[in-house]
Length: 360
Image (cartoon, rainbow, N blue to C red):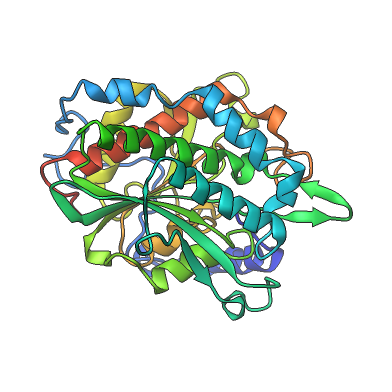
């Protein structure tokens, strides 16, 4: 996850002071300012959401396992990957690892036939990368509505090597990258066994997040698929650890942004969790005035700016955040698997519903 700068924090606090005496609508007309989500229409509730009745979903959900996630994370955090800094050798190794995983499943490339890399020129990074870099795109065609696309994203870059230490980024965001790969595998297996999806799914591994959300910025300025046909973005960033607030109960995930552009997305997410995973969905950071500004600090934000409904899945920060001590052995693989399953199940619902997701 992108780190907030002191200057940006000071600027944000000034904005809060200025706007605290005026109408909240002047702060933002598109973002809600409540941490407790309330329905705008009495007809829309969690109970009103009718989920797909497909028993196969249990089988494919359970293909996402702690052991398979660990295999990816051990590899992604190995010395060979050199901390995956944008534009550096380790990031290129990671990009190839992701593309090779898709190739091993004979998955379609997301850019064009055989092309998994969306290359971002060096100049786009405004001096924050020593070379060009790559988003990595895998794709599954929808069998009924292929023009409609759900994007599942996770950034795979991290901080590289600093003062001789490899910043391995196990949680940030090796955990999200591993989750994305296993979600892709589950959908690919379902596709090969004639179990959908109705809509297309883009698996988007993003570069340049740590330098300023550059990978998602480049994609949204150069989209492969039209925004009006992009149903939602489910963004996974730091999902393998437990923060201090939940040290006595690891069965949680922070959700940020789900209600901001589609009330229906929020209630679908709630209904899916109630039926399948029963995680505690914590919304304490789902507030535009949150001092941490988490809503603005990961790749989903560039999609939201373009009117695409989003959910940001996040475990919160911890003492190893952006330190060389963010290592693989500290990952809670059982809860990582459960969180990855929630993302898979939500994407499955969005991809296979009869009606497309409604935007507010």
